[in-house]
Image (tube, rainbow, N blue to C red; front, side):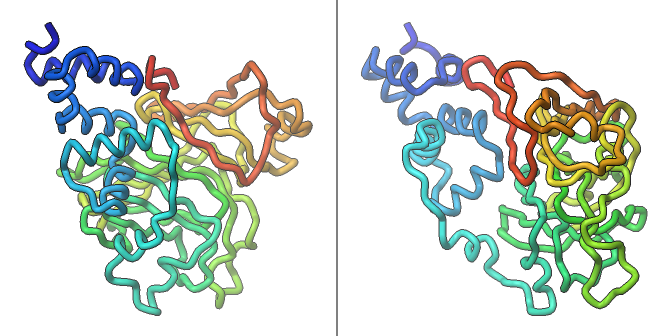
Length: 329
């Protein structure tokens, strides 16, 4: 019966199956069905993009010199779901940046304590300790994986100039209704920056904030980056206050977006002892909560956790994961 289905319906059935063992079992039921599924670019492309972000697919396309074929997407899906083999793509940096920045622009590459966030086909690199950078505000550089090219966005005239920082966290979120974007702006994810500490400013300035001092506002200040052009060449910062329960000073934490990038969860990090939330983490072995943000409502909640809770920690990483079988996060 399945053999008589049109391609679009057959792909829909296979995507619902999804798991490799089940897919193999489905393809084993009929030779003609196996051939149709095995060679369906639409099927394997759909499965890949249901599992991986656009930027991850683009990076593998370059690293593997892949093409828009069923074979490439099938191999990528198998690799991503089994994780049997992993290797460094040692030439990927040169491939993505065929034109290296001049020595004057070396601050675009030399940094520590920064973040890198995937936003569709863009990789957005924010902040970090950059003593060679002469900007008096938070630095941004963008890799457009379609080019590929590395660029330093021009800030829109109305853009805020957030404080330079390091040891912050960032994640991609869907554009909230309160974001200020010009007419005709592309439908790209925004990048939300949370917390961090001052980086000390340019190396030749003496009146900069002391490096390591917490950024004012902590999680209660939402620093949002939006793009006015599809290649990330023009960007806009805005800072908004959030209500709710969350630390007003935090660094060394980790954040990830979930619920279709409409909510953000934060775990771990350091806080000032004067912060109202510090008592919640004083005994790091007995912490049983995370902080969750509703991006649209700009509201934080301290959410209790259950199960085998890990100890509160710093300088870690975290990702949001969606279960393939039932789409739970």
